[in-house]
Each structure stands twice: as structure tokens, then as C-alpha cells.
Length: 175
Image (cartoon, rainbow, N blue to C red; front, side, top):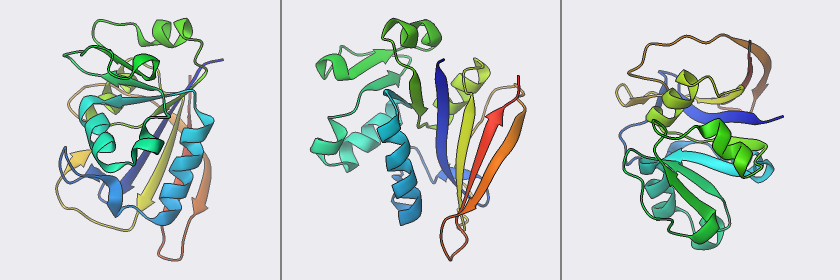
């Protein structure tokens, strides 16, 4: 069974970042530990072009380069890191067929907004992990945006991650 797990950290006003270049260094240590665990369980990470560039810029090479990525972009580039990075246009490529081709079973979706929205619109996200940090940005990037779709989920678990009130919500998609 193939499982697409969307993992996101959001503010209490629902923002994933202040802007497209904003790194998630604002999230708690507890969130970073959870994220690392989810990434280590996955076969491949799906990200958008901007999220990929922010990660590449902010993560140490020894961590960044050991992961496999599918980078979603409307302007695919040549394969930069051999088998580790596959650039594709989600409007022209069947993502489910692509992950089947490479025998990926556990897919970790890390954003940004356009990536989360595209995969939700294509009905690929099976589960959603939301870390809610007790921070307000006021303005910024939403988790989902710009498309008309609907999806229903069932809450599987709630976990308080720290004394400040960071909460991890785990949802499973209803069919």
C-alpha cells in the first residue's frame, strides 16, 4: 500500500510561513524531532521548488543530500543529484504512477502551499500530521490555498509536545 503523509507545522492562525523564502526555524524543538522521525520513515520526500531551495540553503549537506526528493515545479530542471532528485510538473505527470514506478511506499509531503494543495486536489494525501505552534504571524502562506476542493478527515490522535502548548494532530483521510 502506498501512503502519502502530509507533514506541516502551522501557527495558531493557520500559516506555514511568513513568505515563500521563510525557513521553519520558528518551529519548536519538539516539532523538529517529530519531523526528523517522519522523514526517516519515508522512502521519498515530495516538495515544491521553493521548499526544496529553502531546505537546500538551510540544511547541512550531509543531511540534505542523503534524502530522495520529488520536486514539483511547472518548470522541471535536469536531474541535479543523480537518483536523489526527480523534478516533475505535477500537471503533466501522474504522481501515483511515478511513485509506483520507483517502488516508493511511504511518501512524506513537506510542502509548500502549492504542493499540499496540488496533492490534496489530486486526492493523494492519505494522512495529515499538523503541528500547531502557539505563534501568530497575522499574514503569510496558508497550508492550502487557491483551489476549490473538499476532503474529509478523521482525527486519529492529539499529542501535546511541550509545556508551551505545541500540539501534534494526526488525521486519517476518509474515503
